[in-house]
Image (cartoon, rainbow, N blue to C red):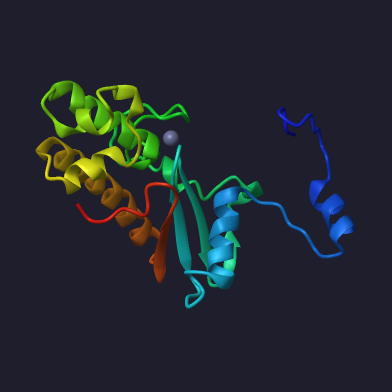
Length: 190
Ligand SMILES: [Zn+2]
């Protein structure tokens, strides 16, 4: 069902398959991205890869021995909702302390804003023209690159959160590669 599109029980894969004349399977965006990278992208040298996307949330897709692993009824493989801090930040899923609540771009923006509120002298204010609502997923990285101490601390903490989740993934699946995508991924080391 899609509330936005007004579809209820629409056999989308079948309809598309008939139109295109090729087999069609449906999955979510992060699963499709993981399989795409495995089939002909950054994961094509490996049999087992995990992909995570850092955006509004933390999406994930898992390919094990060449097969997409989605969990029962395609509802699993949600690594963004692994808890990395018990009783931590509230997550959109209703739990607290999820990886997503610390490592998504949305979380990084919140972390940046909080740090700015505590440090009115930080260069981060200049980087967003004095308007805290203009902070984006790049602001802290830009500040850190310019040497701002508060920005460096934000980035350093963010990378710790990210590492915590990645270590869980490595311990659980021991994939040959973990691929990181999404808006925040293309940042240089601060
Ligand atoms: Zn969650």
